[in-house]
Length: 59
Image (cartoon, rainbow, N blue to C red; front, side, top):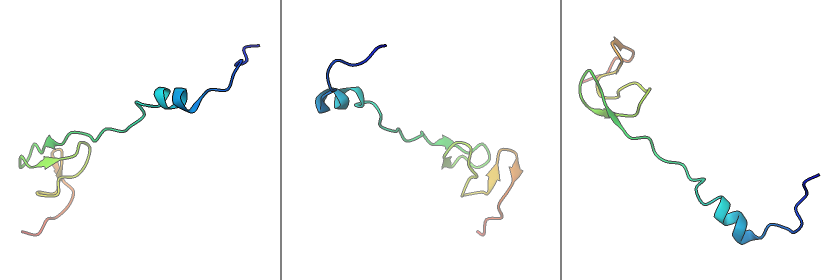
């Protein structure tokens, strides 16, 4: 069986986990009004998701 000969040090653990961080998704433009919004979410400016209106936004 493959068994580690020595304990993995904290330094080696940190080096291995150095790239675990999350990245914020880039905002895309709403196809209806052009406002920046996160992908796969309803636009807060116009209330549209793709081609259909999901929310009624008060102006």
